[in-house]
Image (cartoon, rainbow, N blue to C red; front, side):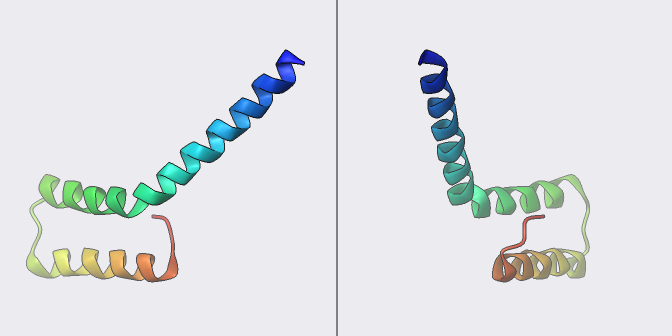
Length: 64
């Protein structure tokens, strides 16, 4: 009985963590893009290229 409850609670926690991750996904992608930009010296067209990739992924709901 206790094992079943633990399993059920664990499943709920996984679902909640995934939903929180889903909500914060765009924020994470923006932060990742900023980190890439901060860690590299980028030419303007390279930065534009990253933005285009981000927009494409956002439109098509693709995780990078």
